[in-house]
Every structure is written in C-alpha cells, then in structure tokens.
Image: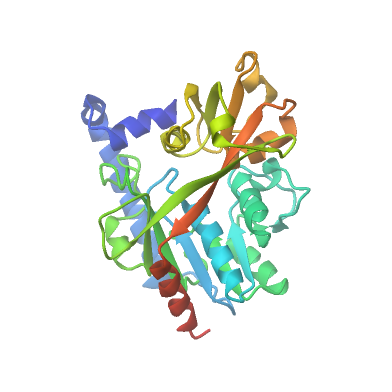
Length: 334
C-alpha cells in the first residue's frame, strides 16, 4: 500500500503529487542536508575512516529506490570475471534476512530469512562466494580470507565505509529517475549528477544513449520450483503471475513478451516474505503459478505443488561493456 502510494507520486504526475508536495519537500530538504553532511564527514573532513581493501572493489548500485536491475548486472559481472580468470566474491547487505552471526557465507542450506533473497539468487546463478553482513567491511575481509581476488558489492553506491575502485550505475530505462526529486518527494537516494562520475552506466532496457550500455534480460527457461523440470514457453497455459520485486510490471511484460497469456497478475512489495496463506485460493484446478527467480528462492521451502514455476532470465550486455570494465580493472593499482 505504502509502496504504491509513493510510486504514484514519484512516477505519475497526478494531483496526489501536488497535495503532498509541501510536507514531502520539507523532508526531502532534511534528507539532502543529512546526506551532504554525511558525505563531507567522510571525504572532506576525514572524520570517518574509509577501508581500503587489498583487492579491487566494484560497486553495483543505483540512484533511485526500487527494482532497477542491480542483481542481474552482478550475475553478469561475476560470470564475466570468472571467464577471464578472476576469483570474484560478492558482498551484500542481505535485505530482509536476519542471522544470529555475521558475516555469513551463503551455501545450499541457507534460507532467505537468514540471508535475504538476492544473495541466494546470486549464489545459485554463479556459484561464487557470497558474504552477507550489515557491515560490508566485515564481508570484504571474509571474502579476502576465502581467496577472492576481486570484490563485487551488490548495492552500495551511497555506502562510504569502504573505498570504491569502480562504480557501476544501473538505471531502469523505462522509469529512469521518476520526478527527479530526492527521497521522500522523489525516488532518488542521491543527486542525478552522480551519474557523471561513475565508471559505467548500464540501462536495464533499451536506450538511445550512445555513450552508455543497454542490458536485455532475455528469458531462457521456465523451471518447476518443486521438481526442477523444465517446460517450453508455449506449453505453459492458464497462468497466474506473481511478483514481489521493485518493478513487477517489468516481469509481467516479460512474461507476455514470450507469448504467455496471464489470467491474473498479483504484485507484492519488494522483498515480501511469502507464507502458505498467501497462496490459499489463489489457483484453481489446472492453473499454473509463475514467478521470478528471486521469488522462487523465497517460495521453494513452502512449495507443495507441481504447478509452481519460475522464469529464468539471462542478462545480456554489449561486448563493449565487457571490454570497458575489464580494461578499467586492469588499469587499477591496488
């Protein structure tokens, strides 16, 4: 409910924006002051120490809240680095997870309520070391102890406790920066000017920006959550689609783009924690449930039906993006 309320203000020019403008603008100004002070305490006054790792650290982040496509870029980059002889590791805050001990290395036994959903998705798709902790410096040190020679931070552009050797900005090509205001009046965590100082800008979707790069999320297969059986796109019918991601409409558009007719679309807040009660009465006889890989991670342990499926998508980027980031890594002096 709250997420939908703010999305209307941030991405749709409705009367609600003007009604809420005075109070939200005040809090946006407070947010601006706090973030500016925090920045200067780190970089101008050197009040806080910035940790410098003994390996390159690449930060994948965004300027706006919600689903911009960071995780697919992380997966793409990990696989690219492994292909070129590196031993990458990923650090993550693990949003939505709560562990008794940090940092935590993700393995096959982990549940989303311990680590969050995205770290498990990254681990499943890449097989690389993934460390989860609210203190990212702890995670970096853990991965270095595990033999990783390059670190990727899933999110963290606005996290200053560790040095960023390379910064990759991910932008939703359709929604971009919304109304271009800072939180809570707009979706921005940081001013748009930040996009001029990063090393690489990746648009999730097509863009006419010739100086930056587009990423396509290409559907590759549909997998049964319980049995792991695969099914052709054309053979999946009577579909109820659900999504608990930052931009659920993108998932629904992708499903319809591969020729699947959706009987009903159900969206939940990003990082929503599913329970069995969420699915009671949702499906009728001979209907199939289709969800994202990220949601399948959370639903695997409660799935008791053979008609629950997840759509796997592969991130595809221009070869020029590969060349640029590899050249940037090779040019670093650590």
